[in-house]
Image 1 (cartoon, rainbow, N blue to C red):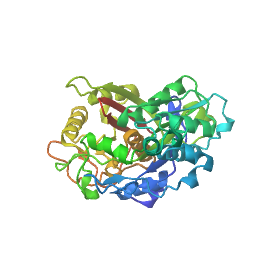
Image 2 (image 1 turned 90 degrees about the horizontal axis):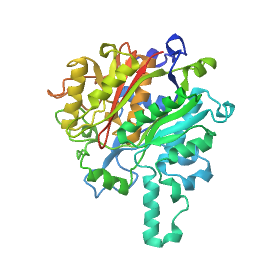
Image 3 (image 1 turned 180 degrees about the vertical axis):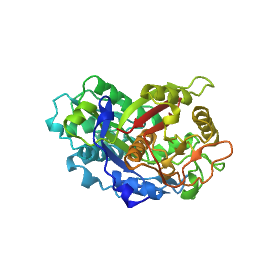
Image 4 (image 1 turned 90 degrees about the vertical axis):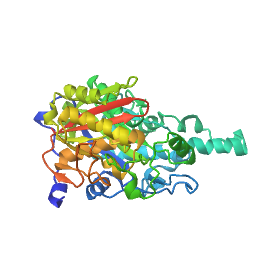
Amino acid sequence: MTTATLDRPAVRAGARATTGSVVTGIGVTAPNGLGTEAWWAATLRGESGIRPVTRFDASRYPVRIAGEVPGFVDEEHLPSRLLPQTDRVTRLSLAAAKEALDDSGTDPAALPEYGAGVVTASSAGGFEFGQRELQALWSKGGQHVSAYQSFAWFYAVNTGQISIRHGLRGSSGVVVAEQAGGLDALAHARRQIRKGARLMVTGGVDSALCPWGWAAHLAADELSHVADPARASLPFDAAASGHVIGEGGALFVLESAPAARERDARVYGVLTGYAATFDGPGTPRLGDAARLALADAGVRPDEIDVVFADAAGARAADRAEAEVLATLFGPRGVPVTAPKSMTGRLLAGGASLDVAAALLSLRDQVIPPTTGTTEPAADCPVDLVSTPRETTVRHALVLARGRGGFNSAAVLSAV
């Protein structure tokens, strides 16, 4: 990866972004970097954010590693009045939203009163806040439970707090679809843009790194029990044994192309395609989601330059995804990458972070690497990118599967 490539500026709205929804701002909170450019540079270097858990004492649990967002000082990102009423996940979300809005060059106060809204994805809400208040209830009594518990735990709390802080009073909502939710939120925001909204803040951020959340993760029996952080997350590898959990994600500013063009906004890329499916009994439908997203984008399979895989890190799930890719593109027919090998699966924040990586791949014309896995298993015949690959990137496909049968796919295209 050369310095010249990193310094390449993002393109401005032009002929290929005359219609549709474009991304003009990105905000990231990730285990291997706080802030978009810090995270992207670490990702291209192959730096992992998976390490021993510090947010609680995990010594008695069979799994003791996770992807934690480093260096996040609450007081540096939130006014003091918000600290008593917010969970960790909401604080991370507020930081990502501010970065995305600042990055976009947007002044929310200058927008029409109901011209901008918020749609986020969440799978757990304010889990840590909820645990703390339940502990207070059972150990001290109801009078010690915070009044903020009434909303701080709720799935929609990130949307609400972002909306209030930035005065975004337009149509808003929340999507609950676990890992697939980050793509679904973008699609809902695109729908609002098509209905006339000028701007939407959208994406997903999640965090449930607390004993209560840990119990839920362990109960699902899908976490890797490998103690070595460098070997715990091995997507498409013959030694894959499950995933690592993480926190964080990405939020975006999505605008109508005419609105972005009107203010000469920098554009990272266009959300050209999206689709969602739901598995039937014994009938996985990730492949259908991918095909429908390509059709929505008007892009042929041979025009896709990179796939950001769901990459579950479990043998059966990885085989199933590899089969989908081989059917759609041919064996090793398209470069495949999984930067989540450096962060863990971020629940509703995971696919959003992949979208951020796809957009920066379009900007810098480089595919970020997958770490840990150096050679895919024989039954996973994918062209896995294990070192940064400088190449032409015009269209990127992002795949995501959520617990319970959710499948989502999105196509991001250069302007």
